Length: 436
Image 1 (cartoon, rainbow, N blue to C red):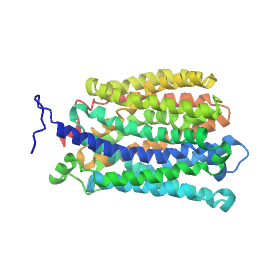
Image 2: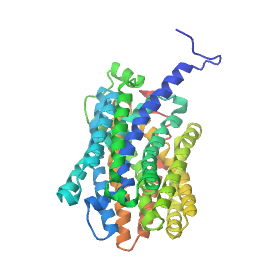
Image 3: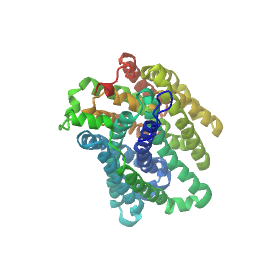
Image 4: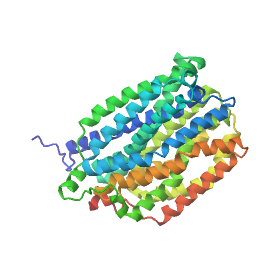
């Protein structure tokens, strides 16, 4: 075999293998999140087709409630696919989950409207979202465990940050598809009539490609070693033997997920309904802020490999507690697209302290035999309660004339997580991945 080590002992082949594994493990994450977020990105166009109402805000609220309701299925998906990943391997779990997302996207793409079949239209839409919710719930735990296990231990924060690069990239891809359809191909009337189906067709096709790529991905050496040593658990509730770590995942996720979904899925509606930007300006500002957020993720992830995970989490908690209300209040009052973008960029400088490293922190908390389930179930449960509900809570408070109350609610969520960040250990210093 050809020697691939450089003079300083650096193994080029090993690094190439790790990078390829991270790319394959992450690319399906992008596709799954694209499929899931296409719903949020095109909600402004298809809501009337499934939820007839005279008030546009009421239509969006109905569609947002369904978006939030599907989050309730994510803990089930996290438990199911997390157990599959811990029992039979990360590869099998990740391949099946992306195929489920493909099926859910196809259902939405061909779903008849309310005008065609009445109340059965939102029922079918809800069923498709249930399938997508279960699929997405299973994606995160298995992919977070896999990427953390195959990454170079000294650069684990950097490599794991690409989970949120692809997660945000999935939403960005949905927004860019919307932008292309808006500006290049279809009129607003055509988008509302039938054009909103296009992104779901694209998502289904991309999911098939991701499934093919994942079919050939190699299993992580960490998992294979644990299985050979008999350290994997046949129990689907094995993660409950680690109650402290499970509660830590809930606490460190609460504020971060509420902030993340505020500045991603809800922000498009906020820019349109509260800031009152045009359709094109709303899409452009949303896309620009997501590109900025993607760039920040690996920078912060690499920083965590030097200064530790805890420092970044505490920084997010402190800045989020102090500046969330001023940022959102100022954003609500502006009518300038550039100012809106700069304010969102400032928000992402804060929130990335959580998003860039939350996956690796969770992976470093649990031993290999329960890692995927331990990450997925408490994370999905917390996202269901605090992330998926961020948009409908914000819209509901807007409909009753108290939009500013949401800013205080988000601040309290971040402050509660800050208490956890201050008291938890730095997982870079003591990682369960090295402990087995």
